[in-house]
Length: 397
Ligand code: C5P
Image (cartoon, rainbow, N blue to C red):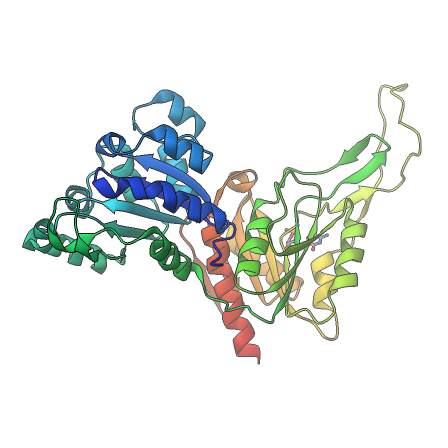
């Protein structure tokens, strides 16, 4: 079966008779492992009900740009960033024309404009409308902008005509969409990734920790698994499901994280330290809950091991990749960390904007270059970062 494991598909439905096929398409996407959210134009709701699409996708359908309730749940910009792929199916001649001109006068056209994810279009219309020079010129413009055009098929049409303009069948669309993600470029490689925060216990009920959500590490682990790697994710306490195909080892403290990493690092091709490891831990663990008897208490802290540096010191070291969440002088501080920790690559980002966010902007720092990536969904960024890691691994061999 084709895999769309962990992929987030935003399905845009416009007003054509082929809209009824979206029910089947949604079912196939979900069966292939994708998460689906649906946005419909007003005309689309004349052909298929939002309730059908809600029931099949398991998510509320987005219908109106100016619906305050829907915007509060997941606003259109958030939705545009959420997507790994936007698929417009069916795409009418009118919607294609509006996309070409960058209009943003309803929820769907706005999403297409706002997203940084790939956009695919499955045209469906009467054969005369399809062949018209206006439609063809619009499609050429979309192709030039790297939109993917799937179909249309040729055959009998709902209006009785025969010719090109039938929407591609759902099975075929599923294959085309899966093909956009299929790379397998990490097949045969082993990745060890740390993620999330660590907790440094003071007593049985209290600990020192930080705001790390684990989202970036989990996105990297998910994407590496999809790209064919064997992935071991050593995770601090987070509220995230384990991505498909990933082996997750749960730990609490930095010492436990180091041990679990060392236990699993053998034969690893790459180590990515994404965890926000606590730099210090309490010198003493109180076996009993600390009482609030005095007005002031002092905590004595000792330094935690630096996990990534320990991995970089190994004789048979994998490619070692770090993350640095900085609040100021992002590039300069990042470059110092790259040098001090002897890393091959470091991804630096702004600590103030990333903790629980679904998006991230990253500067890639290597010994010889710097490259700033545009802000995007963590999954999209993860794919890009894995591509860079893959290139480095290839150069090493
Ligand atoms: O906290 P810091 O900015 O030094 O983190 C930079 C990199 O070092 C990150 O990749 C982080 O996962 C790693 N690190 C580590 N062990 C520590 C502290 C940081 O592996 N004790």
